[in-house]
Image (cartoon, rainbow, N blue to C red; front, side, top):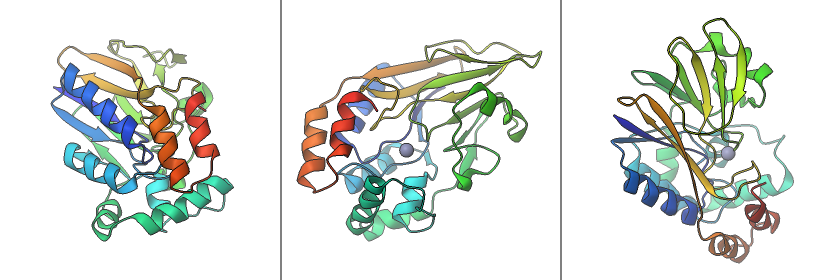
Length: 242
Ligand code: ZN
């Protein structure tokens, strides 16, 4: 079984289309989304419709919840708050209903998914470091946990002996006895210095986690943001992967 795992699309239709085309070309059986379909970008409805058509399971992200008015945005930056208000006004009734029905986490045979962290998903904590990761291994039961939220593709490994370390986000075979916390990176707004769209694939037959980075039409995504009247910084940051 090949699971395509996408996350943090952020209403970037150009990045989403590119990632789906790449996923189709390498092959997948089931596709899932780790949340934040909307927020920041200029195509919230188009992205919700494409994700809901392709993904078997999608979970709630903080920007999805914010656009629905069901999470606190007081800690959002000013551009994030402006884009939340714009997104809320844009979303169709049907897409609001779809987002409102999303769960905060999900479990499959060999892995679990959450947008932020597994101990309290709606608190929207950020998992950034080995220290953060080490504190979370008791909060989920499977050997693999995929998450989003930070927009930084990364891998944390805890060996059978209990040592936790951060690995490069490159394709790897999960080792027997180890447990992993994996960020698939962001489709629509990467923040790891690499502006290319990011996604991951889990192949449970070959026992392999794969990472992909794809160039997409950043200029068009930027023009859409500016034409929509959204804060300019949301366009310019796409060039830097920041
Ligand atoms: Zn996000």
